[in-house]
Length: 165
Image (cartoon, rainbow, N blue to C red; front, top):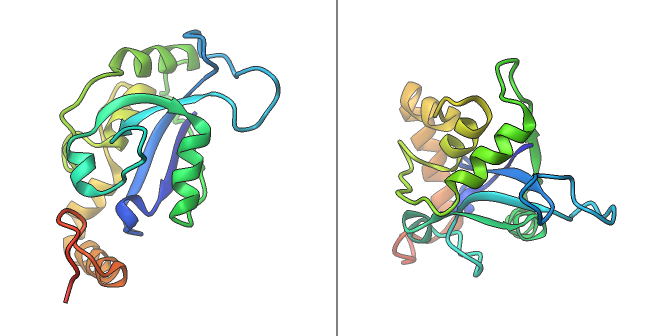
């Protein structure tokens, strides 16, 4: 499954995406034991410390982490995990999982051209795309106003951590 939650970096306009790859085996099974938070996701991550700042994202790598950790990050931001419906052109699930695992360890995070949504959509469809980047480019003033409101609400600069005036 392609998963996401809103509120990446503490900003409501940005989303964070991952691919659910199943249990600890590389086959992408659904996990064992029946617990709903079992299994792993592969996504751009700043590491086990769950640092979701923009600065950490710029240094992020594609990593495999427990689903429970991904859910905890979303919960800490008041967000809920959602499933992105696969389009008719989606790859078969085993191929999606293989692609995500193959990309594990990669880096080069860039908010505009190589973000977590690009990674997830490439795994699912073979096409690197990002709806949130598309929205920002098609309606930049609306997107930037919303981002500014989020930053003011947050009260700190997302990279430098300094208070905003």
